[in-house]
Amino acid sequence: KKNIAVMTSGGDSPGMNAVVRAVVRTAIYLGCNAYCVYEGYEGLVRGGKYIKQMGWEDVRGYLSEGGTLIGTARCMAFFEREGRLQAAKNMVLNGIDALIICGGDGSLTGADRFRSEWPSLLEELVSKGDLDQKQIEPYKHLNIVGLVGSIDNDLSGTDATIGAYSALSRICEMVDYIEATASSHSRAFVIEVMGRHCGWLALMAAVATGADFLFIPEKPREDNWKEEMCQVIKQHRNMGKRKTIVIIAEGALDKHGNKISPSMVKDLLADKEGLGLDTRITTLGHVQRGGSAVAYDRMLGTLQGVEAVKAVLEATPETETCFIAITENKITRKPLMAAVKETKEVAKLIEAQRFNEAMALRDTE
Ligand code: F6P
Image (cartoon, rainbow, N blue to C red):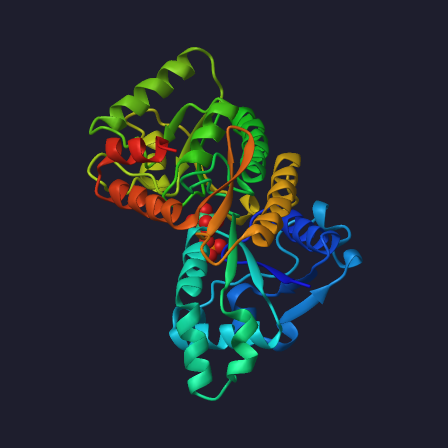
């Protein structure tokens, strides 16, 4: 009987609970034992009460809950080999054959590193006398499958990450609220949204709410962005609009790679010599990440969780570490490291202001 563990790691995202529920129940349905590792890699390093066998009923009600009920962490100890040694030891002691990890690119890179180091970690544990040869025999190959949980929708190779549509929906709801008060007072609002290096949330929110102006890292503004923005907003006001909404991604840049901040935009909108609008800044912050998942993320987390268990059961020692993607509405398996590498390259190209190359890379399969 295989022992399959699931864990959530890095920043939480709506839909992670659907993943945990699907993995636990699919594992049990297919005749395996299901485990949860609590608090992400931190739990794997600590072991003991952090690794718990789960029953069918233990995940009841998970679909409608926000956050991740099994906890998550950005674990520093796992960055050190000592931490990974401890994690490997705990996996063997708990008899875990396979690990399904739901997290962002950092968490998934950690997963692949763990897998590639696995044989040497076991060897070291035996040579130190922490485990004996007989104990490690059944665990010669570590089987890992990744699921992409992130509100940023920033991983290459998948059309949607688990949580992105929930965050987008929350942002739109918040912008709608802000619009009402903006309209009452005839005010302007500069609304900063999350996304790290990726402008997907900001772009989609701007389209969905009909924002007046937008700043995203992928399409940096030209040198004349100040004049351009003022002109567009003036035109909208002249057409009778009582509210102004500017959406700015937290990673927004100008053409030279300089950060465009909400306060720069606010000062410009409020400038008495120019538009002279009564302007406020709203940083939406973590309301974008919390709260329950929209139907799409519950569905995505569930279908991908089921597929992850199947991938684990079909894997051989030769199989490359995969992650579960959604591509043109189909749940697919893809090589994990290629996607992580590409995601990092896109971020680097954006930082180096090589935007066209970054976008071309992001558009590839
Ligand atoms: O990656 C998800 C995300 O919410 C980003 O959009 C944001 O930049 C970051 O995490 C915030 O991290 P923290 O919750 O650690 O402040």
